[in-house]
Length: 256
Image (tube, rainbow, N blue to C red; front, top):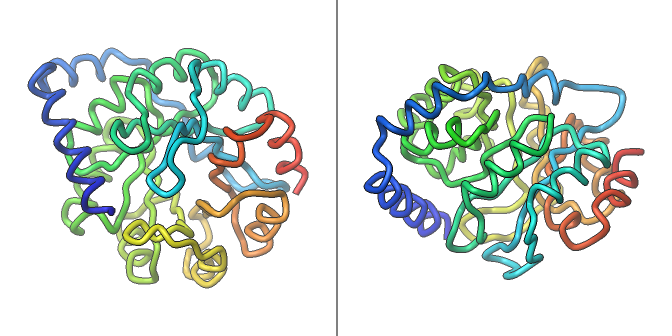
């Protein structure tokens, strides 16, 4: 599944590149206001912080929500207390787009993450041109040389990389990039199986000074509390928010 998602995202990026060359996207990225400081926004605090996700669908669950107005949803997330917004831009299985990201960036004052299967520098420049402050890098989808190079590019453009791991080896590789923001995804992106306890088994390997993000398997305040007790500074939540009253759900989650 992961290989298919990465290949599809790369094909879509190549199509966009033919329509809008890299030089044009680089110029658009340079014209953007500087990226917001995501590390400051997500830094450890007395209470858990939340990255709230704009997510219409997923390969594992199919359609989740129409989200005709992603900007309005993002504003409700900000109102509800989210510290950052994640926007799925993958077109095929998640039904997202860069237009969603641009709309969200224009509507909120908190950092915005491009959630995509990144494997090409073109996609990083696209992210900055669309106003992203953070870019997801999935360790399992990249060779180490690619991972390091993309991380360096993201940093050079003033953005922050959220480097995502699913195993101890992947976590080691994530930390080797010097990442200040590391996610542990409970969902195996090859099989899409969930292991809510995975974060707790790996969190102690993340050194102090690196922000720890728990991803996936968050459906209730009890799940948030579970991750918090295991050492999470931040949780990334999508499905539970787009299928409920987002403000009320965020308020419930943020009391943890």
